[in-house]
Image 1 (cartoon, rainbow, N blue to C red):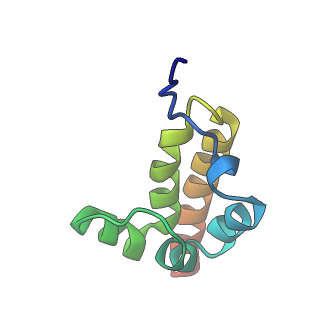
Image 2: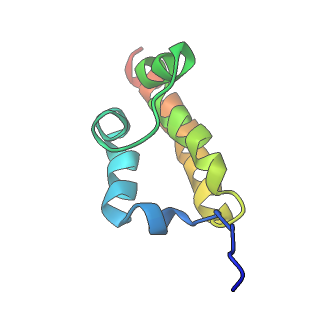
Length: 89
């Protein structure tokens, strides 16, 4: 019997559609309340100032299994962050 140590899982193995929608609409709440990795000062700065960008950076770990999802995360991050800055003006 041979053990397989393939640890690459896609996003939907770990999370579901509801999490994906919540990350898109409410990134700060979802990152804070869901079981996502928290980090040091850079993680918290990203959470405070650019949560969409933080979600896109965290999505990079799924590049090999879900590249389309990662590309959409970056598109939403760039549009979401610029959209928030336009609202504040």
